[in-house]
View 1: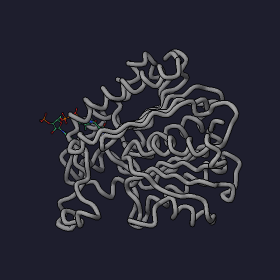
View 2: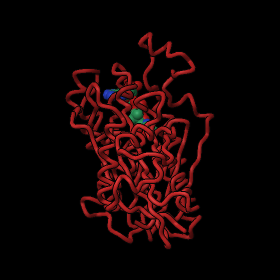
View 3: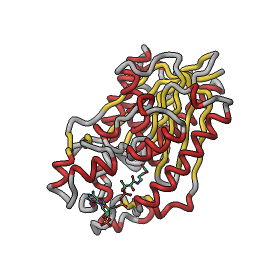
View 4: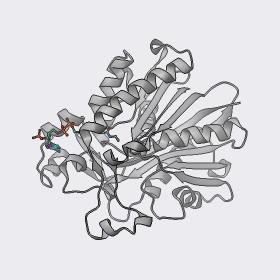
Length: 321
Ligand code: UT7
């Protein structure tokens, strides 16, 4: 038994923040942001708009694309690091929105690798026969925890959600997933406060995403380079067999480095970062849905998905769409 993606969906908040808008907030400029990151604009939530709001819109589109009803869903697995509430989890809040009851619904935290982690977990549920219609989501509202006075991070992050429906299949589908983490890198990329720390920094207005960008960059390129090679080797697949690379959208230069490692021309890479920045766990399913809906990604094609985030956490999936 394998799992296959039966449908995809995504959603971006309506409000757009351009590089010119950011020039009014911090000492930055459009040229620096575009050349160093590839980002031109990003979508951000407005007050009252939550991760579950974005996840619901993406989920409904994925369900529609898969031709299934909310009532068919028997597993909800959400990758997010920016939940609406401490609990109930976003999966459960989404289940309520969809008007369904009883199936397992949970969120997992793996920062920007959240969707790959969710996909890896849900794939195993389906393969084992424990789910027949899994809703797998990556959704984040990182702009809620960004320090808007820190130019080195606030120009990067944005909000969004992406979703896929997984169903059982006799042929893959998802060929393999590869999930990894190394907590020794905690201090290179983190939000330094939380529930059991008492939110003291946040209350004092001293929290906010912190990143040693340069160091993260080097580890990301190196780690993702090894990951994509390992993913192909594990399946005896050659890089020339790949139809599409669907990477995490953190920095166009990282994406180009991984494409180069795979000897893939940029025409075979789905790049969305220019329009929506780094949407964390939403990034990969957003790019996938973009490629599917604009007709580039077609049924039967071989896709390589990869992501890297705080922790560090990283993961990949090789799949036939
Ligand atoms: O998704 C999770 C994983 N995240 C990532 O993979 C992100 C990895 N890191 C990166 O993408 C890049 O390191 C950044 C985009 C964050 C930064 O790019 P960089 O080329 O590594 O720049 P830098 O940090 O080395 O900074 C270069 C210069 C510095 O000025 P000096 O010291 O050379 O005078 C910064 O102060 O750019 C300056 N700078 C800015 N200038 C204008 C930093 N941020 C900005 C800004 N606007 N927004």
